Length: 422
Ligand SMILES: *Cc1c(COP(=O)(O)O)cnc(C)c1O
Image (cartoon, rainbow, N blue to C red; front, side, top):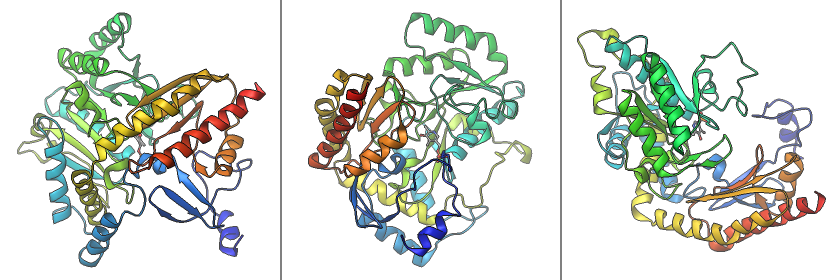
């Protein structure tokens, strides 16, 4: 180990990590396509696209060139009173890609903050209309919407951090996903009982990500949208994970034919290169903030919002969606996952297998030694990082069939080894 590694490891604090017992993290030296090269020379095939961001693989030359050119002309400028071409072009393109009149884009730098902005939009929208009591939010079991205080309060209470921070977060209302008659009735009853104090419902459309990679169908999503209309509530879809092709459409909400009032985007927005997020509002939401009174304006503004380098990367990423057959690649990945991952269902210790677009999840039953399992995957030459009780793949869309086969084979190997110990 080099000096800088040994010294640095004594000073960094890793996310979601028990620093006393966790094995040392792997040091990555470079990345290309679907592969990570470690400082010790080993190469790993990446099965999870760096927390679901690197949809075009790593170090794509088109994105690199766009960022390099932007670095020469305007790396950053404040977005208060000043704007720039990369942000204006990107806002126009996002508005054109999103359904309906989702047409006003507020840029931030992380997914959690884009959800915070959506919440502020929803709450202030009602306040601006003289309905200041409408400020609570309905979220769903297994949801994940971020790690900041307001977003933690919208994460699954058992898998999330509600116990750790009880009393320090706003209290929101959790519902079951309205998948059948019984859950639809209770969802409706909840909305009816609380509508006077509710601002919005928030949902991860079709696939709930960090809360366990749980999936629901388009009819469930359409029902949520319809119930929001009926009860006069705003619908926020958090497409931070599902957006940009991951479920097979550019945005998951398209599959249900709905236009949410507010959409949150991040993760794959820049193709996994630079931090950027966007909260996109429908015209009527935006118009709710128009008045002679300055206090009616949206009160938010991160220092690095709409960073030009990040916007240039996002524009380059959208170019690639236009020029290359990304959504067809997702269809091919889904088909291959069905053939190669679905059979894990028959292994002892496997509770469920879920596949949608370029997402494949194997839910396990019983205790899981995550550290051991993660180490084993690295030994097999793949970067797969199970969490909770799921082992999952969300590979870059450019992954080759051979690379994907290596990933699914590694999962079958590791789960087969586990099955023999049960
Ligand atoms: C990752 C994620 C977030 C949080 O984004 P950060 O950039 O990590 O703050 C919120 N919602 C969903 C659905 C996500 O997948």
